[in-house]
Length: 414
Length: 222
Ligand SMILES: Nc1ncnc2c1ncn2[C@@H]1O[C@H](COP(=O)(O)OP(=O)(O)OP(=O)(O)O)[C@@H](O)[C@H]1O
Ligand SMILES: [Mg+2]
Image (cartoon, rainbow over all chains, first blue to last red; front, side, top):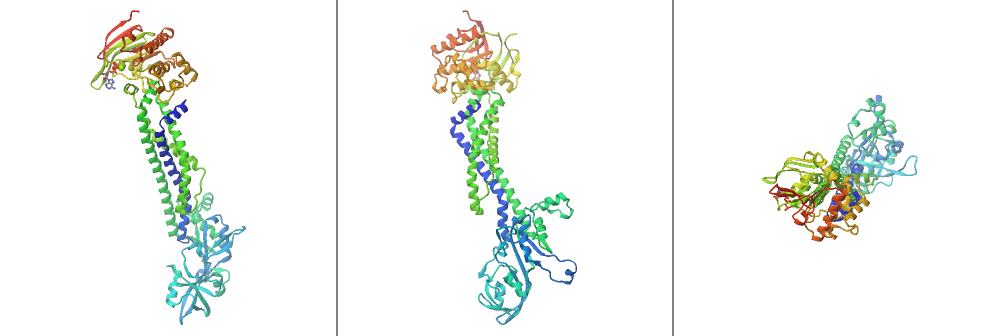
């Protein structure tokens, strides 16, 4: 009977029902899209933010006599692939080794001492234990590097930093002498950073030139990480076993650094704090903003439903008075109208959910140039919030309906 | 103890007095007609007896229950358990058909029972109009649905506010015959408001109202 009443009453007020469905569907679509985005936003945005540079720096550990005597220590190039074998390997999206040295540069009959760095610009390495390759190199941590000319294709070619080139008066194609050996400038680089005053060459070439095979001075890592929270700031040394495990297996920048330190022999890995912290803050705020917007959209939709419902109730006061006159108590009246609301919610929610699939993919491609992952659990959430919208929107009208006096309504009606 | 007892019922709408201290008693199984000029308080009195309205002061007892002291929900319960109401205008839900309108009252009472609803409509001679909506039926037919609806939950008290007000003599007679049958066979207590002297001849007792008070109260001589 209840279903019969609802079905016929829906058919009897198609316009109002359609309006409510639109409100609910729109509210659900916005909420569900925002939630879809929010699931992925941390990942997507932190990937975007990662283009601002490395957030972990791995250097040789300096301790004991070596520190006092100033003896230079190095990391091993062969350890780089091991970074892709740690627990959080999939979060490592960029890794770039670097060997630093100083050389005497002679060009245009001027001589001066300059820093020289050996790097990989873009290099494919085999993933340990897998068929696949991964890309390492400076481009993966500093994608803004823009070389005018060409990256050296032989060991006799170098890139010259922009400031250095200006000072020495050299340009692409010129020849320079380093420690007496002849090299060709194949390109110039301007980054606004230290590189502008350095000579840059292929890592292998520099290792050979300086006779330091397999050695590197430091490694820059770009890693996706979970924003730091209170727990993350705890000192791992003071943690219990269980706490330590939880910390180790959570993608905090510090725990990723710790795991990297374990695979690079003789190393110390530390987060580049100003970058890591800014990222965390931005992500936290974005997520908060999204939740807030979702809440607002639920509220706005509920308001829309409420106004439509109130209008429809005004037209239905006679019917409600009649229901009361033939003996409906508040429980039954609430049952009828909450059921109507739930049904509106379920139908509107389904429509809204389907819409959100389209909307969130549009947002994904427009804002992040990527498809957003669709989660199954979003359907119950969408339907839940749709029913919530409809029920919230019905509360006020129901309160009004319950205050209707049947005698007054029935006397004046028709 | 009388079936219905009214003690000094006053109903005020702001400064206006609809009822100015009405007291009376009605016995179980009695058929009482209420007459009087327009605005004299007939509907107000009926609504108060049926628990559709509450008096400003005074006491109403039905079967020993003091209904003017009941809460909203208890009053709703009283209405669906004890009373059957037939209104002056046939109040029906426009988008439900005849059977469904009767079943609606059953649903609010306990459980909708289509067979019983069809039975009630058959009793009022509407078995051939079950699936019609109110707008597809004549005034007399609509009024008969209302009577069927009023009867469906086995009430002890049938309240009718000008049930034949909009009907021609033929239909009026038919409704009255129906009420008479219910009254004599099933011993319903009936309170009926009417302007029509023809209608007031049916029944056992006539109350004349004027300006919110009972002016006369007399039995009908058969
Ligand atoms: N809701 C209301 N607000 C204000 N005054 C009302 C209200 N309902 C009834 N009245 C007044 O109370 C008085 C009695 O009304 P009631 O409906 O009982 O009259 P009645 O005898 O049934 O008249 P009729 O024969 O025209 O149906 C009238 O003067 C009417 O104007
Ligand atoms: Mg009246």
